[in-house]
Length: 283
Image (cartoon, rainbow, N blue to C red; front, side):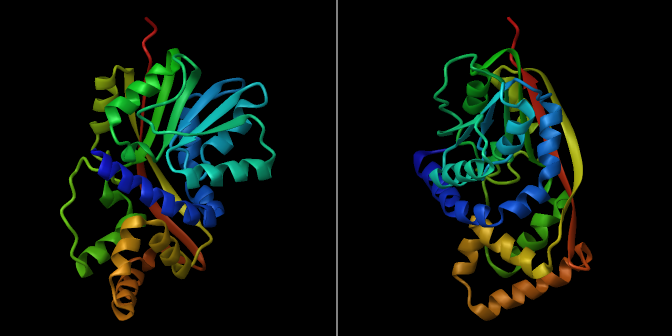
């Protein structure tokens, strides 16, 4: 990714930070199973030193800090200053003292070799500027035989939380053809794609697992619409150029299509993610 594209992506996340903070409780609830899946896969336990790459508004760092306990530690990183500030403030509110915070890019980690026991990344690898370099960096900063574990979204068609809105926008608003390797939520949805990058970067014992779960929350369609259209940079961009009546027509079409996922003030979407993990060589 060239510097111009990288800056554009970073600016988008900087703008998104306030919305991730606004919906913090809901996001934690909706994606809790991703966090627990990652913790389980990376075999995180008491006393470990864990690096979280692209920690966003704070998860999984906040959860992991409680698992590793006071003798363990978590290093949260994110390239967007707004995300770092939001996560740091939340850790302060919770009185967590075993997390440190650093603003940095995944492909230039400011840590010495073999600093951490485990490296995790939840829903951020899809946005790495240079994925192979980022994975090499993750392997560099963990101990021999240390574990790296990434969670990314599976195929679009298996994730109506996104497509129920995106597909309707695509019908109403002309969008440019996306480069399949450009930063995007579904950049690594194809089975084997991220696993191939881990192998290319030098990881051993690479394993890819499919994680099927439900995105659930006490949320009406109105709240869902607001959350999705505020948190997504691409949707914010599209809506900025539309007349109110066109936005209303899109919203109605989304409501009709997504009806089956809402009942009695509850939202429940089926979802699919991939957990891709590997080890640093013991040699």
